[in-house]
Image 1 (cartoon, rainbow, N blue to C red):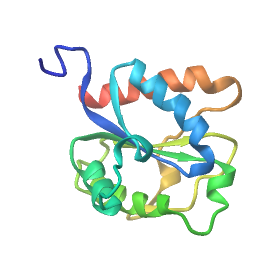
Image 2 (tube, rainbow, N blue to C red):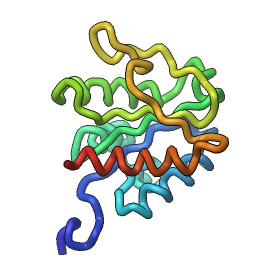
Image 3 (cartoon, helix red, strand yellow):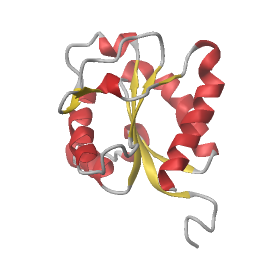
Length: 154
C-alpha cells in the first residue's frame, strides 16, 4: 500500500534542535505525526552502530519535505552545537532548490533571537518567516506548521 493511499504523507520532516528542547520537540513531533507527516528525528531514527553524520546528512538530503530548525534561548546561547552542522547541510540543500521555495522553516520555542546565520547572498535565517510555538501561540503555530509542510507537497 502506498503512503498516499494509507493517508501518510510521503517523505519526512527533519527536526533540528538541541537536547535541552527535547520535551518541546516531542510535542511538535506528535502534532506532525497526527497529521500524517513522517518525522525524522535523531532519537527515533539513529540506530546504535550507525555513522550518525552520514545518517543525518542522508536524512536531510534524501526525501526530506521540510527542514524544521527549532530555536530557544537555551539553544542559541550555546557557542557550539551539532545543530549548526545540521544547518550547514540544510543551507546547502536549500541552495539546490528553486528560489522562494519553502523548505527550511525556523521555529521559536521562546522569545529568542534567531542566530545570525547566512543562508545565501544577502540573506540570513532571519530573512525567512519563522513560527512561534510558545505561550498562547502554540496551537495556532502548530496548525500553521502542519499546513506549511503539507503545502510544500502541492
